[in-house]
Length: 421
Image (tube, rainbow, N blue to C red):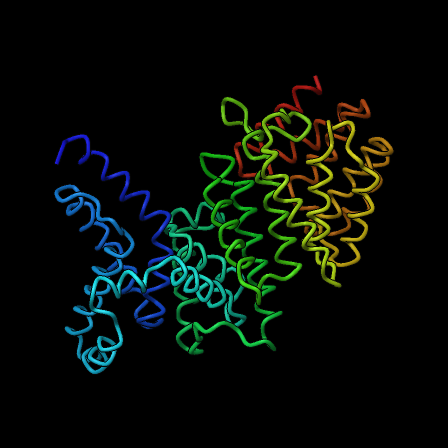
């Protein structure tokens, strides 16, 4: 095997593991069950090490997924045969599993993998699991993230991530959660949980609060892909699912323009709109149009409409702020979120000026959660700066800088402080 080809195998295996591990685990958990969760993950990782060695010498097989699944499956069966409890059931399991390469290829076709992923999404978002445990398990199982990566994404320690995943897995076993799709009577509640987890997953990628990079595009891509799987199935392809997909794509279209050449975050008014991905914007509009077919308006519909107004505006100054204000008013009737209150105040300032924005923020600041949020002080500081009251502006901007752990957020605040001079 040529040296250059050998050298190319390692990054191929690494890429394959990062993007395919979640799919492989989903299929194998469906076969071997929750009680063998740790074994499945261990064998998938061991198989990838084997792949690195084997593919260096013999080349990459025509069906890498089938190869890895077949080897991992056999490793799991071997481990179970060595276990006394596993011996009792492994013969029965083995009889139901395909043994030929043709059978393996069929088992690991794209449609079978996608079906397993859909089942795993709903299992990870089962109502028996706490929301923070749902998100940690989704990142680990479906997205292939390590414990360290999950800790960075969720702003918690590695030990906390391990405990959340352990609790989630224990709950899945204790409550005998099935990998079958939810029944019609349970579908709406379960689908709402899936939507919320995907929404949080995308947000963690869109605006990473900790770590070396301000944006985690891989998290955004995983959230969009999983939402795409939902959209591909009639049972899950609801107006709210389409609205969530539209919202993600509108934001994803702006990702490249959100960073400067040094990796710093650019606010919307600072971005080069020529860098926005207009193909994605058109796709987002298509999904938003589809979402209007239902009779129920979800927060994703309204947030998607707000994102659409931003993407369609020729410039920041030409944004239809009045339409966006009406949308935030509608959002607050559905859910009085502190973030919605803050964003509404920003829109008020764009329409009526900084003092009107300050008045709206004082009303919003009665929410205790918002008062502790660094962007609350940062926004007050910016309004005072625009009003020419620099001492008050500095005071609040400095407070905001102390509240955020993100170096990228502090860099934005430093730029605002510099303007106060």
